[in-house]
Picture 1 (cartoon, one colour):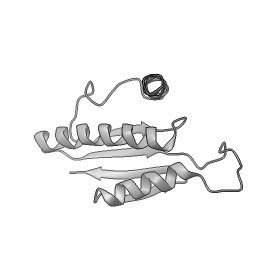
Picture 2: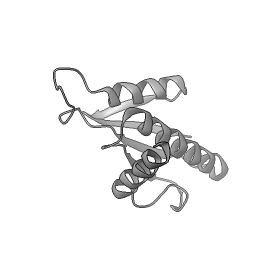
Picture 3: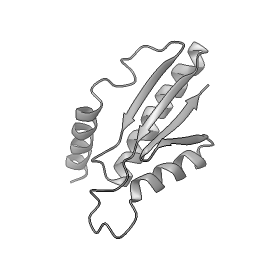
Picture 4: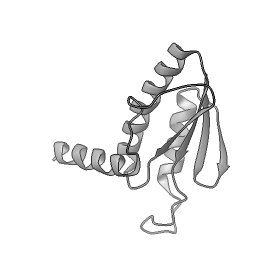
Length: 115
């Protein structure tokens, strides 16, 4: 069951993010979008941890800055819409725990600057 969930997580993520961070070049003024829509909270955090680790390593080795936008959505499709969306809250908490400062450029879209 865990293997099936991992495969589904990867499929959903790759549909929304066709090029992985390992395959993209980095340079001054580069931006990246990590779209976490469609993933459960634990899946999204797993993907975000992997992507940000890869991006941080690339930024450190290149000496450039990278602006990363993280799309978490606003929860319009959350079942039982009376409760707030869990994904944005979990991602924001993860960023805080990692010591990454973020801003919310628009509802459902977080911006992190990696140096």
